[in-house]
Image 1 (tube, rainbow, N blue to C red):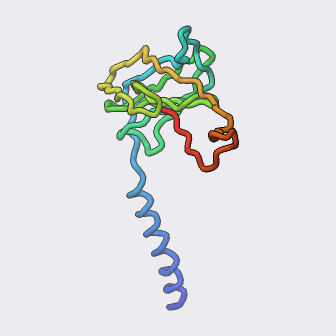
Image 2 (cartoon, helix red, strand yellow):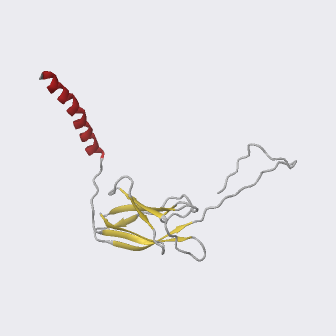
Image 3 (cartoon, rainbow, N blue to C red):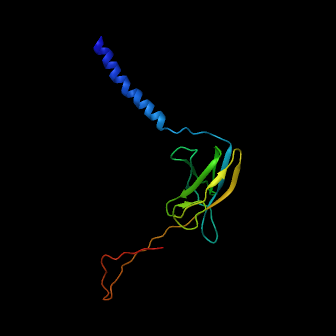
Length: 154
């Protein structure tokens, strides 16, 4: 009987510790009434909608991974039921450079979007730059391939 009680205690204590660890590490997500919506377009002279791109909204009020939306055929996205707060918006799609809302250059820092309770931030316009590939061979003065040459683009 004592060994059965000891066995039960040994089994229950680790699971109780694990449960308390998980509940402490999980951030609760609150819902609200704010909304952020907009359109994702190319950064060409004639901007065209970017469809089926991934748009990610992150902020302290959200879970660690944030919220994700996929743009429709018109490049539009929307995040609803948001708590008031400060949010960052990013977009990505294969063939394009990842972009942050409000960034002045590729891979640059973005601009936060601040919404209050019940506020609707509509008409957010994000732009994606098309990616490209540069290939070739760097030659030395004699016309031979130059080994160990570093190439950088800015």
